Length: 388
Image (cartoon, rainbow, N blue to C red; front, side, top):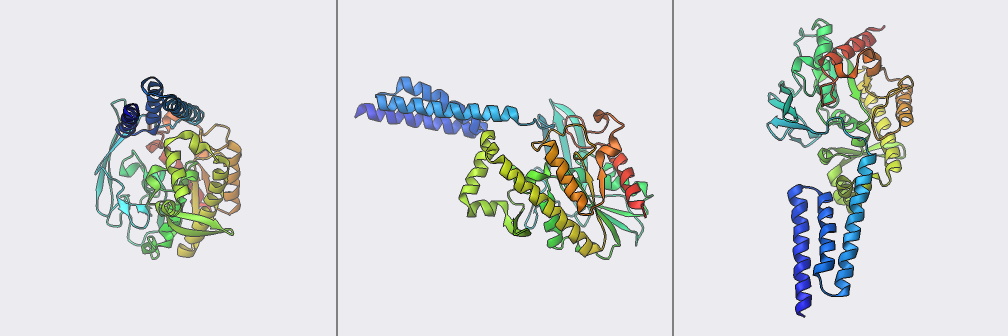
């Protein structure tokens, strides 16, 4: 009896230590490392063959999870901005929004700082006007309007208000046209479709909108299925019989479907779990992504009678360089082909920037376009939109 009580006490202490490691280090992987080490210790400290065998099996299981995760992690592409530390004031930004999950607030400003190995990469203040759009150069009353919608690439993360794509486009047009920057870091096509559905752009119906411009990157594919820790409260869409249907948020779906919720949570912690069923998930993402862009294009036409213009940092039939994404080059090229067949005006970022080394085009360590890159893209965009 005393031996059993001792075993329970040791096992309880080990379990508590594993939980503490996971919580303090905020890592399920390190919790599994601790479990493997303590499992081996249990073979020595526990009494009785059954207890020792159980400890050995637990150690082997934990060690297997660690190795699977390490191998999966090695096979996954490394993010360009790995090691970069972002800090914003206010801390929780963008703030929560009941419609889109998160969105800037009107008449506010945000101080954003990024460092790499304690070296300052940028320190910028983002300003937002009374409509919660990022500030752009003023234009005369009654001027034609161009809406810029999208994620951090449209928003201009790491850049001053005047260095964003929308601002550079306005300057190229002599500030005779109004550019509205509705970009928000972390958005995907699902946010943009929901933005139109909820009437959040209806205020521009009488503003002579000539085009809506968005910017797509391969990372958007994962966002349409909510594969990102910041996307839980974001709008979720599914395809049913080829038609898009809004179902609420990703968090709501995961509560309704606990299996999907558990699969997501484990995938966030373990790379090998995230890799399970990746082909099927990618197929789902591709279909959703194209359907969302097609719907967005239709919404722009219905709302403003204007075209949706897509700027893309994305491989196409002429691209040779690798993009370092989880998706294959061939798959990404096929997606651009499908978007082109929708009749969508397209502008390749590579076609505007290929004359320059990548070090001249991106914010160091960060990977977002710098002011010079945006200037080149704005020039290409102006030429595209000026065509009869």
